[in-house]
Length: 612
Image 1: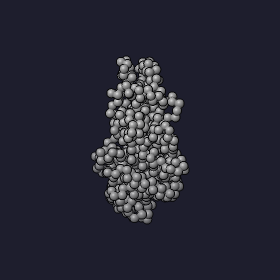
Image 2 (image 1 turned 90 degrees about the horizontal axis):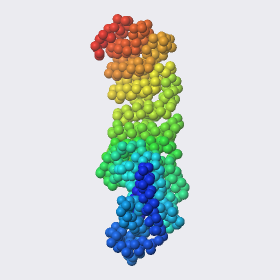
Image 3 (image 1 turned 90 degrees about the vertical axis):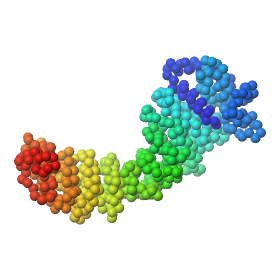
Image 4 (image 1 turned 60 degrees about the horizontal axis):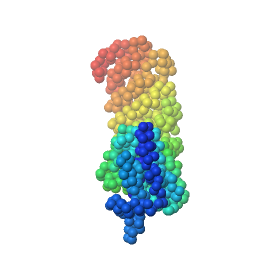
């Protein structure tokens, strides 16, 4: 059917749906005038339409001539589905134009007639008519909830028009044609897509959306999804279940992306289909073929979709020229890779968490890890080469110990945050996972995990531990072989593990002995900052620091005891100032000055960065 008819029908219904109280009342009265007129044209009364144009041949414009020839079955004229509706709607429009008071509403009257005929018809209407009525219902529902969506120049009308323009590509409109599974699916998908998209627009009321971008997204996603519907009943059920679970959230995300940065996905270099449409379609098809429950659930699938489009936006050069083929290859590689990661690490991690971690990895690699992506085969092993070493190290750490703050790492949110930090550093420094047996990642995770396990009194919050992990990862990456591999057997012998664990043990001992009321300051932000100072100071002098770890521990113990004795005069600020002033002296010389009030005052009086 000609898209003009669809737009007429939708616009007419939307005008009624979005009108304010006063405007609606006036329009309702106008409608009462119009409807007796249009009711004279019955859905099956073809003679009235033929007679009208026989008497008014000048109204048969070039656009209407093909429909007229098809309607009259002229020899050699191609059959145009919906020829009668197209001509009948034009008749209603022309009749309305004759009434000066109603002339401004001519298009609305024509569209309203079409909706009324389809709604009131006693004979079956075609799949296309059913879909248009569905679009009208959904649009009217949202217009009632949020009238601003359909205001002048509203993005919602842009979306509805874009969808209506391309629904004809999904369905036949012959009411006598059997309503097959693809027709039913098309109607279903259109409604789901429209609902989700209108929800996204209601969340981004100030978004600027151009119709061209929405047209491309709709055209390159929904009709081709319908075309790909499988033939067998078993596959149809699985495919439809995945669409029911995913299309709404995925469409919502897609429309949000269009609203926020359309140029990132519809640049000219991507051709007529843009990038977002093929990627969205390929994602849904891949998820349906794989089966939603085989590797991830709904939440994980939506997270993966967001991460995939983020990767595409970050690395558009991977898709230039053939976004369709590139999208399919990328997703095939990602899903295959994800299956391997899930197989190897589920349990102890559930599949939803692994999907979320995979999404985190994709986003991070796209943003940080350009060297990890092979320009020739960017979709191969993106996850396994980055995520697997990190997960393996975390699993080993959790199996080794289950005490102290390490228990907190067993929650999905904690693991996701922990892994995000490590994956980000790995993406920035690929050498961390290309060394033999990923020893840097293993030792880094083990060192932090050992210190967390020692934090039996939970002196540091989860956020503070994550800050320590981030600082340790950054220093390890910048100083390979120093904090982790100077000497000692395995991760337990690394300088990083010794520094962190010794500070935690000093803090634990003071807390057990004196408690908060006893004047101890080595907990929370102070303990976190002391660890950051120790990590950064030791990274540049690792050999000396490893030789003098016992003295570094003595420094922390002596300062903590002294502050507790002078609790009315000194506190955490002074502790950190003196620790910062003396730590390099201890590392470089192995000697520890007498810790007393004179030492504290000298450190406090010294210029910043100058040892006392």
